[in-house]
Image (cartoon, rainbow, N blue to C red; front, side, top):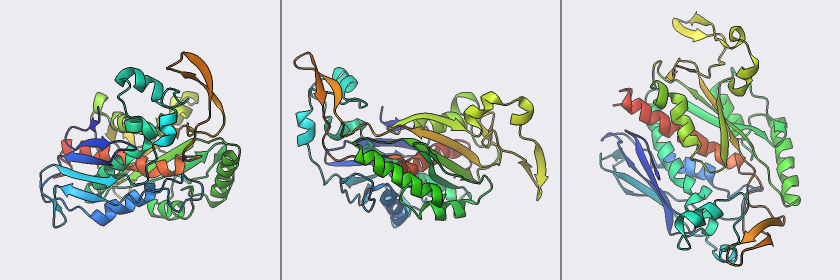
Length: 361
């Protein structure tokens, strides 16, 4: 239940308030260069430290590689890495043990696993588990880079605030503008309004959700598989493994329902000796395979479930309805920190497909 992939097989482990969180990866070809500093950079992007509008749980998330790496290259054995959980506070969750939090997995997990389940901080259902996804995705990203593949994620919207993002903008430019603000939006004017919206939600004891967009350039034409292992299927599978993701679309996505075929079809043309399309409503994917155009997808991230407002729940021990005020340290909006996670899971899925299709050694 905690493993993904056929050739690039990642197994995440740990829990929110356990000793550690991390990942084991099988299938990295022996001799593959792995840059530990590059992995750490991606972990640092996920951390809340330095973000005024994020949780006050301060984890260092220093990468610790346990196995599978020697002198900067994969050994071919199982790669294992983790980060320690150091800023742990169980007391608020112990007080809520019998009162499941609305929007969280507490109730179905209690029924499924019984009272022995450790749901402190969300347990294995917590966003803290995405540390392992980011480590795996960082390695997948490095493997894909050797084939000229690059990807960038950014905040497309938070609440009712939408960012303007030109479709033709280069990834390097998008990345630079995305890294220039706290909400990871490449539109500076929208970023300022997003920060104001998050601050207002926090003052109200509430939270906000939004949309993350990921753009991937350089995929070899034909990469992917038809039907069940299409690029869309593979990315959607891992995207929905990210806590709080509730929807996904590729290219024109749900807008396609309002278009005619003559509008949605992307006409082919020659550009500098390569086949390209004049539009990209398909999101760079046809028949589950890469077309050579950028693969573009958007994922919906729900509002943070833990809010300071009083909510209604039940007392499982007494069999009564009760009010609940959730305490602890929580993000009023997790969208900005989800950007690197969605980049990472996309890299995992594409690395797996690339290995299966023979596009990587």
